[in-house]
Image (cartoon, rainbow, N blue to C red; front, side, top):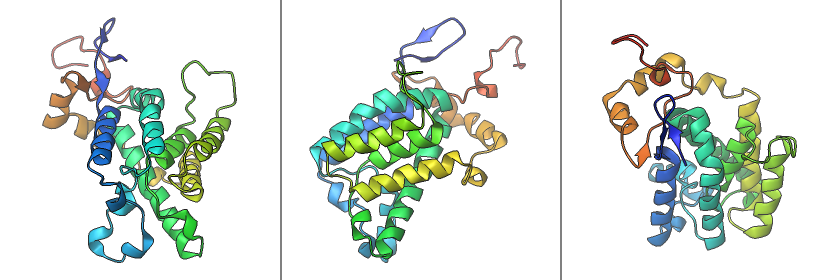
Length: 231
């Protein structure tokens, strides 16, 4: 995997966010933290448990679900992060995980208890795939882009029972709403993105190896420097 380095050069560094996600999910699985992160609507009345609306995406209790989530991060996550840039990828993933969690809790409150109670990153994979209209490399032209999230939904349901089907479906619906522009008012503006990328921490992470923060394509941080102080 190569990120965007200086013009004409390839830098063998991995995308920061999706690679850290793989390490984090694996670590949480090893320490058995999955049940403490699962989306349990009855516990959300406790303010200290509100984190489950977001952290449900990081925990796993079933090994097949963890392996599928980890497999799809290099296949989808790395390419999405290269396409969006690290900050936009993180923002979109976090937003869609939260929206999918809220939708699942809402369905559970309407009597569909099977919509919540699970955990896993697959709803976010489905949301990102539906929201970005991204097709895995090598499959361009083979199938229409709208079909990939539905195929992944069917495949996930066959391979693992975690998360529940309705929770996966909430992730897919969140991605479709994102693609329709329902959350455009929550997206980072170019000014905010530039301010973040020019921050000290982002500058340090952009030069790290083997994990590297990737600039958003077309942003000032990605433009080549031709004269000192001028991009």
